[in-house]
Length: 315
Figure 1 (cartoon, rainbow, N blue to C red):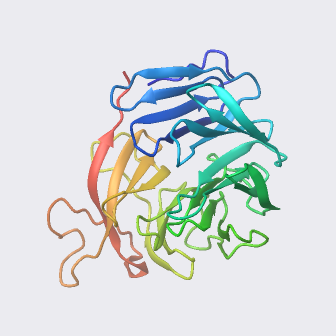
Figure 2: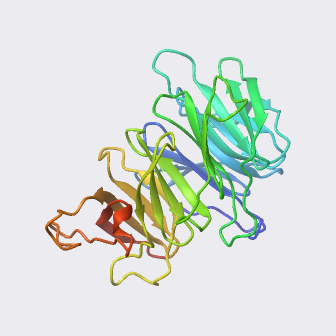
Figure 3: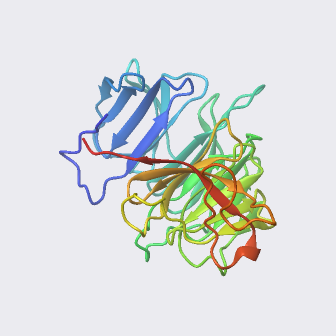
């Protein structure tokens, strides 16, 4: 599955990808055309021609896999029927490019769409009539001084009401019923000195995993009341390329509540889980292939074990 980037500026392109609720297809764009792929066969199902402005974020509507929301570089959001290739409506309310989209998936009431723009404006939209419910301009700005400077991210909590907003210098949780101010915020302090590269809720929504540009990872309480563990710089097991890899993307395992995957800057993917070494054993003496990667500050809370390493191959 390869997006066509022949007619786009590779230095300015924003890549976006969304997986359908049934897991059978994906929508992807790299600054130009929008593609829908069959996950099972890797075939391109169809291409959606997107004239300028360029798409900058994508999300599937949870009640219909043929409806997608596409955030655009001109600050609008297009609600698109991908089968008919018809724009259902265009949402306007942001003032900068839309870089984050997330739908709630409620059991008994209509979902809402949360959108985030590059100027940290957070908007909540009613999906039954595609209208804006509320918005606010936040303080979470991308850190343009670091090598990993990039976009913000938004993700719903399991309660489908609160959202996690990820910035390069801080995290915040908002209540979608009142986004005037965050419910809680977390600004990294020592020993966390590098920029945040990504963060995600754990499967059960009780913790937040945070990756940093120096390779370290934080495990936070979901409301940031305390950080439960700190793992100093993580490197792939022996044999993986490079020694300075850091997590650029983090995702919680959908079935194993404690496991999460880290997409590394060297192209590898590491699956890990929190692991407490027995008190009477030496670090790293656990069962199986567990590897204790704690640094000298072992009193700062636990370790992780490697569950798998996947090296991405270029064809």
